[in-house]
Amino acid sequence: MTKPRVAIYPGSFDPLTLGHEDIARRCLHFLDRLIIAVAHHPTQEKDRLFSVDERVEMIEERFRDESRIEVTEFSGLLVDFAKSRDASLVIRGLRAVSDFEYEFQMALMNRELWPEFEVVFMTPAADYTFLSASLVREISGLGGDVSRFVSASVLKRLQARSRS
Image (spheres, rainbow, N blue to C red):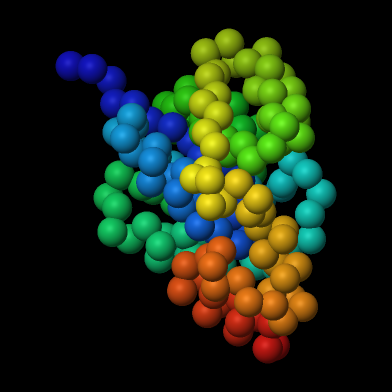
């Protein structure tokens, strides 16, 4: 019997965008199970809009229809979390060359920490290559329409947050 192909898709997901969703669903073409892991401590300094618990809820809501996707949170080193979940494969989304530089460096460092660690870089669908959660947060915070960039359930949460 072959070992199930399990991968971790880590990130801040603040908020979950259609680009994130696109990558997660496409992973299932070559994985048996995907663990979407919301990081407590982001690797890059970012202003947060939603708590970790809110982000986990948001993602669980969006992938409720997909039994092969698990949503959780993690803190500490990604390699330690991946080992604890028996997943040596990690999925990372790339939109631009600038993303690649950073992600490539992180992938090499993680492989130094755990030689079995492998990273699959995926690009989102062309419609989402410019899209980032930070841009969605900024546009939404300024009252702009982000309905083309997030699901209806995420949009509802963004609108409620901007009203408060």
